Length: 170
Image (tube, rainbow, N blue to C red; front, side):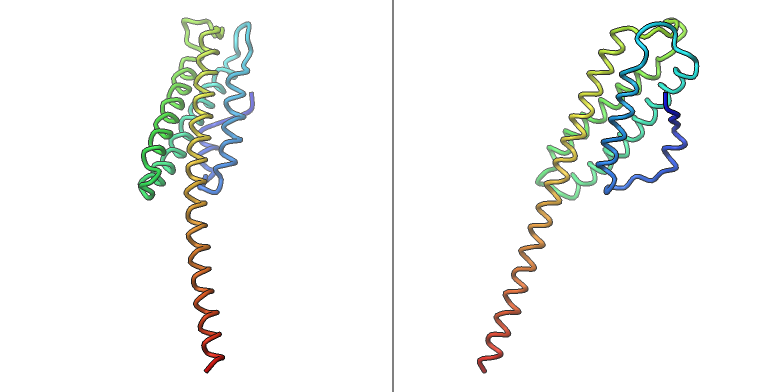
């Protein structure tokens, strides 16, 4: 397992501009969780890595969702859809956290079972779907803002051109 720790993740700042990067990193972390060894005991280090990845994913989802919720507050036209996608992401992130928190439970002898893996796959798919929805909604907000800016620039240019034309006629 790669060395993931909450402290390392917290030390890196994530901004709205990094959301595509967030999706890629989330994909890598979830892939690591889902593709853990199928048979045999997991080492203490591997169990700790699984738990850390679960914490990092849950924290990253919370930060991501907070940005989505802020977008919902600022844009009433997409607020309901954005809140729904954020809620789905939160729920999926919490499911992943819960599944990884029980990794290495003394009652399971550290052996993954198919229920855990199928639950992890379902939660990962749900999370990736919700994150994609949030990104699409955020992108639509940006496109609307860009179109509004283009209209303003066009109207100002028309005013400038009209004033120059009238100024040259007099």
